Length: 327
Ligand code: SAH
Ligand code: AVI
Image (cartoon, rainbow, N blue to C red):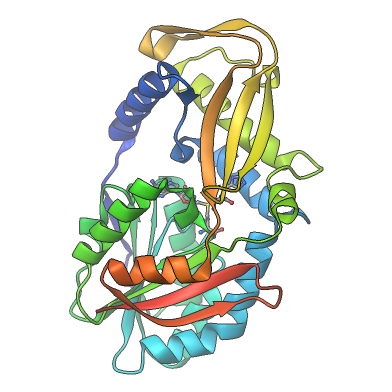
């Protein structure tokens, strides 16, 4: 069994420097903000897994329905001409892609699989797990930031399928999304594929319930960013002094997540020698989750140099999985 190659584009020192930069910039801005990638340490990944199992959080359930039901179609479309190497961006535990990998593997057309994630331990765990499931397939992992390191995608002679699932594509702002698509297009060659999962616009009540589940798991996931700053930057946030807020902005079709201070306080972020004051009710913006109109996303993919081949939705029409080919 070949040993998986691990490409580290972001080591511990880089991560620590990026975190110091993000915290200083975000907490001294008005309004205060913290980028979404800061949520995912080990505890954040566990809480994310737990929130995806809450009854209100439909995106995971719906995307899984599509990927399980359409795995054979996806495998047939992308491997019709030749075997492919699959890279999954923001792979997490790489669970939802498995039916697609299985379908390619059964056809003898899975050349290699590369999970790509900012969290090194997640990438290592996934590779251990997959080595048993696909002993005859080349495996590799990339530890990096998909907004910075797309030029490090594996560059074999075979064609590549880049999967970006879970609606993480919706966590970009509009400008970040445009830049990401340009970077991805530049990193790929004609004949490569892009499989992207996106949450679709629907009844705002259904959407908002998914971001404020009754058990409070999303709230704890949101507050985790403060635990991360406590652990990594020696801050003294008391997370219970912040309330989780999720707002629907119909104009931009986004869920806007925030942490609202329940009392006035000053927080010491010792690792960057910064004291930050909060007024009661003051908010930290902690991320957005954009929902898409199908046609709008298709147009954006096409305008970025991708040719749309298929779009599948789940039985409720809540989530879309788009398969595009580099034109
Ligand atoms: N694809 C999985 C996990 C989605 S959660 C699913 O569908 O359930 C988002 C994942 O993206 C996390 O594993 C997180 O660590 C990773 N991530 C977030 N920002 C990232 C970035 N900038 N670069 C690389 N990975 C990132
Ligand atoms: C990872 N990402 C797609 C999740 C989402 O639905 O936007 C992150 C999340 N934040 C709170 N709940 C889920």
